[in-house]
Image (cartoon, helix red, strand yellow):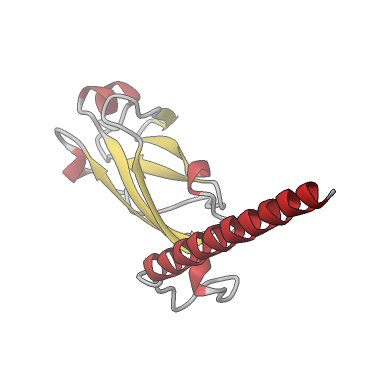
Length: 153
């Protein structure tokens, strides 16, 4: 029984040491995340301010060859942008621009965000002469570049 008691005491001491190491690693990681998140400062938000450590910057593109443009009307097209991977829990602030190979400088609408939610938004592109077609958009590699800043908790 004494041998088992000594062995058990050794296991308890080892677990205590390992727990201390895990706790130290956790503290280090938590502090690193806090430092990184502190670089993002949200000074106003529609739904009110939250803990600074919950802020996140997330960016993306619909892709030059993968943008899913859809017909809207004779002078316009639209695209839905998925931000689900960002993990926002409220509608973020979204800034957009259209990138492409040709003619996009003649359009309007690339910076106007519609139907924004925590997971998506839409853009409508207008061209007065009707050149905003899904075929032209694909041929000219039009895509929406975006940056969103919001909360993840």
